[in-house]
Length: 186
Image 1 (cartoon, helix red, strand yellow):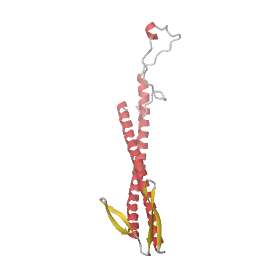
Image 2: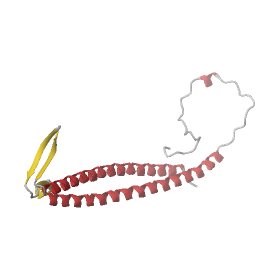
Image 3: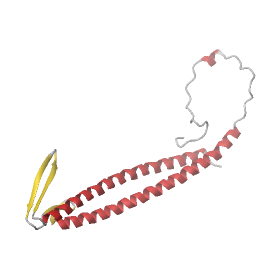
Image 4: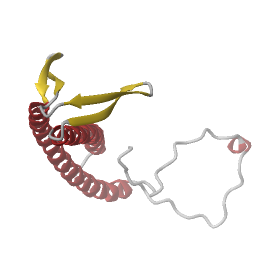
């Protein structure tokens, strides 16, 4: 037999897992945005490397606040880019090296994305199992509670109401829309 307190504990556990799932979804969105940024960076570096073979490379670089700089590179040699090499330290690297570093970082971030996605699916499965267990336990609790309530005889005519009965009653807590069934909010 399942106690009401156990059902409440199960509901709190499910709620905690759902909050954790929301956090994982937010992290996945952040990682996805970072992956998209790496794709754009890799595409630009590819274009710069390819264009450098012609002897003239031009680009426009946004520096924020609606300001864009014109960039031109003369010669057939690769240009350089400042790359964050860790701990806020930047190094000047040829475009091809910057491209390789971007690809390596993207691969690591992709692994993180896969791990977060797996955690999300595992947590969703766990929530589903817990919710099913909750529903089963709630069904077991429901018949036992109704068996304890004595059945009231049905009166043919209601007795006249006394004056004190006409006073407004304090509002009781609304039940769930499914009668006396417990919900995850209980």
